Length: 108
Length: 121
Image (cartoon, rainbow over all chains, first blue to last red; front, side):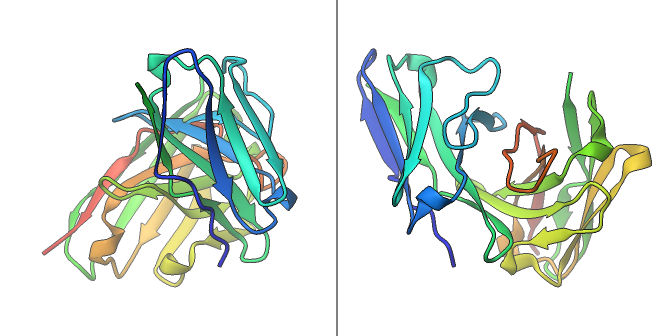
């Protein structure tokens, strides 16, 4: 089955750039979405369709997808960005949605 | 304002059944795919099932096939998840989410807060 691999944790200093990866065989041929989830809250869509940003999401959030890796990039990281981040694709071979295991972003 | 409100969770014994509901407001419910996602305590998100606008297509994660049934009532702006033969590993917060307008590959752009299902004797 199709598996999305994310690093369990990423740490970054304030004002620096955080990069969270989502790996899978030929993920570049899939459409990837990213969600932010803070403790006790519902997930929030931060990037859709590989690199589009929904209304209300800061420009600091961006996405890319090529080859075997999709990446969520958060520039000028703020303390409020500390959260769990999940990638998500639709697997047309199995006709199922797939989430990555999630990455906990810690702002130092 | 888009709102999704789940209900129907609770404590159920292994092998039991439960029916979850999700009432939508603030958008044209009948125009969107809808999805159920669950999250076990302290764990990550798991996609469970989704349903096409008219209910003609339904998709499930392998672990719930044959046990769970997703359905919708567009006249009531409601999404349902009938869960049978429940197992301890089904324990999770179940959330509904608005899926695509055009197809099922789109992002989940609005989520409910979820309802907790606990399977335990």
